[in-house]
Amino acid sequence: MGVSSDAIRLMLFPFFIIKKAKIWFYSLPKKTIVTWDEMASALLVKYLPPTKKAKLRSDIMNFSQLDDESIHDAWERYKVLLNKASNNRIPPWLKI
Image (cartoon, rainbow, N blue to C red; front, top):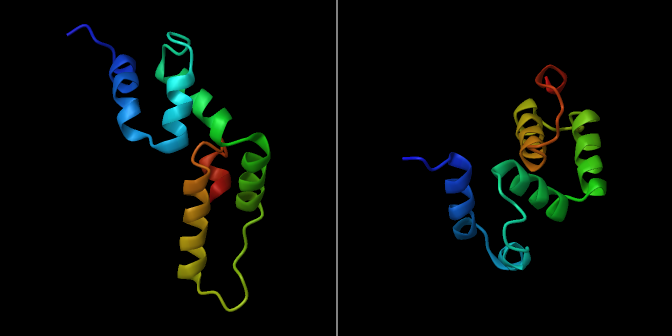
């Protein structure tokens, strides 16, 4: 077809964001973001500031099971942390 996957993602992106993110997206100057990686980076910088990112990374790296917490509950809490920081760049072997 001649249309890149980046172009498709960028065209569909506005349909998957709401409220402040949509306002932010439409305030961007035209043609400043031309790849999906650029969009992902810009979005992370805007909505996941370095301080929050550092805290999430610290919470993951220092994770431990709480007193009176079952292994199952601890594992579920750990997975929530990982999902919150999906772009945490912690190698898989270290997460385990």
